[in-house]
Image (cartoon, rainbow, N blue to C red; front, side, top):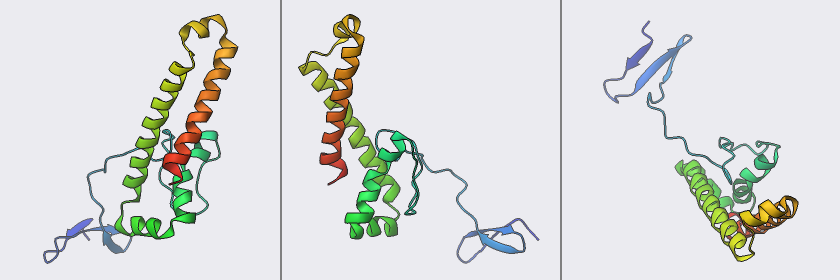
Length: 146
C-alpha cells in the first residue's frame, strides 16, 4: 500500500498510518508567533488545566483565561474560526509594546537613569521593580482584562 494517496475528486492528500488512511496535514510549517503576555513563548493550550507554573507562565495565559471565564462568546467564536492563536499573539504584541513604552517613560519621568544605577544599585533596582510593577498593572487593566 502507498504511503500517500491523493483523491482526484477533492484533491485532498491522505497518509497511511497503520492500516488506515488519514487526511495528511500541510507540509509547510505555519508562521510561529509568541503567544502569551511578555514573551513567555508558551504554545497555546486551549485546555482548562493547561499552563506553566513559573512567574512568566502565570502571566502568559491571563488573557486566555479571562476570555474563557468572562467572554465565553468571543472565546468560542475565535476557537471556531481558528483565529485564537493569532488573536492571542496580537494581544501579546500590544502588551509588550505598551509595557516597554510605560517603563521607559516612567523611568525618565522619575529620574531613574544610569547615573543613579552607578551611585546606588540597590535603590535603582527597587525603583525599577516598582516602575515595572506599576506598568504591568496598567497593561493588565488596559489590554488584558478588557
